[in-house]
Image (cartoon, rainbow, N blue to C red; front, side, top):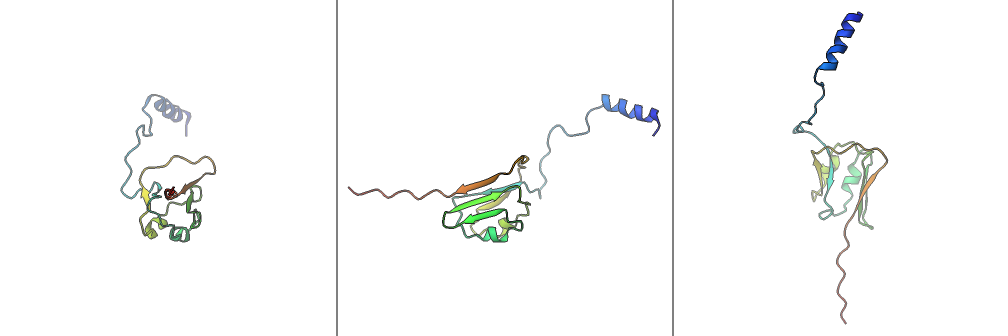
Length: 118
């Protein structure tokens, strides 16, 4: 490319508006953002853990815990499809970039303690 053409292109770039979007656009209908989990309806059946291709989900029936490793999750929504009580859903909201190894873990609340008879 001759120098004159390069200088003209650079000069235009300085005085034109940016080519990138300033305001993010609305997500498309088929956009997959991240997995949302509802601890209140989960039965800890481990179907989602067995169906997850990269093994990003871990469920412990005894401790009643559910954890998802977002660095391993490939957002395929296979777990959402097999969840019987519909505790898992796919959100369209994009999640922020993951900068470190982070496992999001949920624990089902313990049942209320029975009142002692005195």
